[in-house]
Image (tube, rainbow over all chains, first blue to last red; front, top):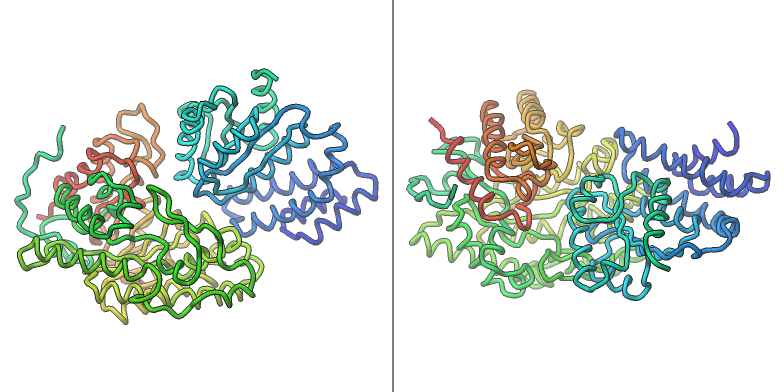
Length: 216
Length: 382
């Protein structure tokens, strides 16, 4: 098994300590940060997500995998940002999982991918009240607002956030993206979001496309 | 169609109808309970916070909504909060929603010392307010029934796993389950006592039935193995203790999807199960199987609306099955109800018609009316 495959397996197994050590070792062996991220960490997390879909993995196991990725990203992130030519060049994004929903694995991943793509990201984390999201948009004046929900009952908060942004006169200044397991394109259309992405990887080109529709 | 135009000429009271169903017996028809928190608040035009700050207002909302919609029980505050708050958690009270944890109380094992585990429901925190609401509901119902209580009161309790998760924060709870099962057990052991005391006191104050809830042990959350080894023993222990100390019927709400562990959940020995968004046929089939093996005592199944037909009958609006009450039309509710009643009653288990989780905020009077109308239309016993 190659070291990248080992990283992938350790993320899948949720072994935080081993993952970090393997990432350091892979860097020493000359693997690039991008290669370790894409083929090791993200692939391991995707395997875990597939396991979740199949009913073989559950939230505790998903969290352990996510924690493994997070601790490994402490090592990788500076190298990735270095490689992308600096953070924040493309635009700003505010990300949040809506109130009542404590899931943040997908959000973390989208945040990381957007950052490495050159966005300046404010990740507000899980269970964020609508009014706090509005406040963050007022403060940061982002180009992209990314909303996440993993539960079918919390996805109904998403239109409330969109309405609250409209009420605050902020709707036209941002592009709103939605995502999360139960969220699909038809739901995004129904609630008036600007974009939807299947996963973190496809969120990046979508965010870039939407960003390009806004003035600098 | 206006469902509200029927007259209330039934001779069996909601109290009798519900008591019979919980005992596996038939009266005139299938009773209805969709946990009418939002039905009551919305009908009275008050927010949850207003109802929480003024228990008399909450009691009035429950009473008048039951009289208006004619379902078969009233409920107390049925929310996470009073016990967790008395233990030491800080809650936030949104304007129109149930309280939420503002900051988890227990982040490390050292934090366990900050918790107050031994509680007196008649003195600590907001628990006396819950008891006051129950006793006022009782008084008011007896008054309205001219000396006889005609509508039962359901009170709510939180399973130990849920309480523990509220105290640690949900994400941390799942990490504890994965990393430190012994600590998870210790937390559940300590967490059980407060809710048990409140439920017992609520029954002393006048509650007639207890329902309990666990949203953190479904297959959406943890593995069957974690459920069987860690959290299920505490559900069962909680149910046994409630029955032993109150003598009341206990209904369990396995919230979410429990398809792969229905056999285990039925072994908790609750009298009834208020289903989450699950396949009603499978739930019934497993209950019959488990009862026949002598492993359970499932007398009634509550819920189901939304679970039976995923799409609306007009074929136009896609309704995922958790939200039919909110997004569907009365015809969708009727069709769901017909299937649910038929499926449950055919198995000779009593159906308590309801939604497949709490009555959803903003469901609308027409859909709520449609549930009761459907019980009258499809749930008559010959």
